[in-house]
View 1 (cartoon, rainbow, N blue to C red):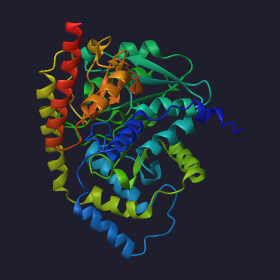
View 2: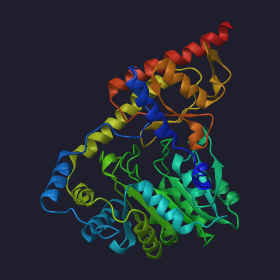
View 3: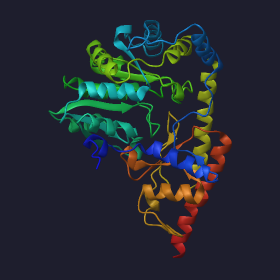
View 4: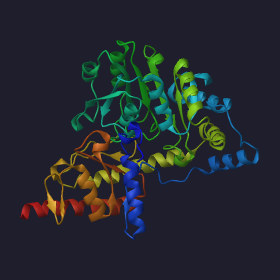
Length: 403
């Protein structure tokens, strides 16, 4: 009998991918499922980026590249950091990977030994927790509140740090809450970490350009913490390039070299064609970027208008990314037909089978009272999905009141 390794047996399956797969299976059965589970923009990659990829093929960019990426690609990323974030990372401090997800796991595997503690503000992106466990680390969560826009405070951070703490991982704009930290808030957190010289920060900034507050802020901007920050970014969200798979880090040189080393044993370099297209994405004028930003803000407001009218939901108003993360605990214990809602997992199953809409349970993000709703789809689909959501939740309320 096959005995799999413990690391895979105890590794959690990605809840977002699981729900997307279930949606596809139900669609094959003829169900009219509206999928609000995946964080994938519904826009096509801008035309000029696609054309750059075609030219790269025609020009013969079809061979292995340096593990960390072509030099001119890393130079383009270095210039992007300076232009957009006022961060100075030399090309040698940059490693290009097959998506920001690989960028993060590279860093975790390079920094975390078994028993090291990694602080994760809750809610967190689903893969952070699994990555830490995969490295043998211990995830240590900090619970946040909707009333505080799901933000941790310096006092909470200081209280959570122990002699075993090695890393803090957070995202801003945040997946799944849409939370965006201000410059002042980041500086206050950086000052806490600065007092503990053995702790590093992974700043996941993949949603940088989907920010409704205006200017994006990076925690590495503060000189007193710069040498202990790994800034993670990529092309998937802002440039609608999810399938192209390119992420990157700007990091202290020693960490960048370590990530280059470990990536050389895993995947080697990122797709050569994607790398060439990246230069165009990061250097040429892209009016569609603003168009997509405006569309996401419009959709945010559309969803907000519907959610405000649904009794029983509590939520913050997201200032970035493309998610709402409402607390649905008011529906726990309620019943409709053959469905009894004990938790957010049950509610997600109820919604996909009863309302034909797919969302993700908050337990996957470290908050079992919430669900994640992605609005990275068309206004028409969102409108129909939200009508279905309102009807399905009303059924639970009515059934309970008449029982």
